[in-house]
Image (cartoon, rainbow, N blue to C red; front, side, top):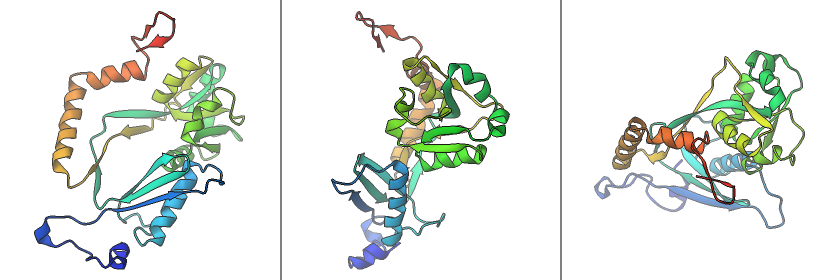
Length: 247
């Protein structure tokens, strides 16, 4: 973990009198202009290889330092090893669900039925944690990972032929407003909750307290719930004079 500092001739620990808490390691990577566009899952694998090769974080070491990878464009990623990374309290929870043709909603609303089927093909965002949860709960599914930006294409007929698209119920509900031939099916009685939160530097106590207080206040005064109902559930939408929906 100290390899980059040692290679640069820097001390592995900042002097106590400076008040600094260590280094932030950053690396940018991109593919050649002639290469194809890589999926999020492929970039995640490259990120782990880069961190392992640089001596920052060994692959498979769950106790290693925390790091983040940010996709800046289709052909490049940025990596940062953040010495201490924390998260704010969750501001909303989303629920694992399937987006299916309306006539198949009843089938996919049963977790038991989905688990009993063999050969079901389900598209899902190519996000490592999301895919891990999906395969854990439904090990017999044939999962088709797709880049997050291409998820909507499955509803417009541009993707591979699949039986369902796995998303969260909240995001799926929004998409069914655009594609009314589809419906959201939550596989009962299973209820997998996926919390959303803000990343914060662990030593940034001022920001952590601010976000914690802000999230608590906005939950209690109904702001977050009102935004959720409007932007996710589509309630209270108005139409513009041209007839197109608007906020």
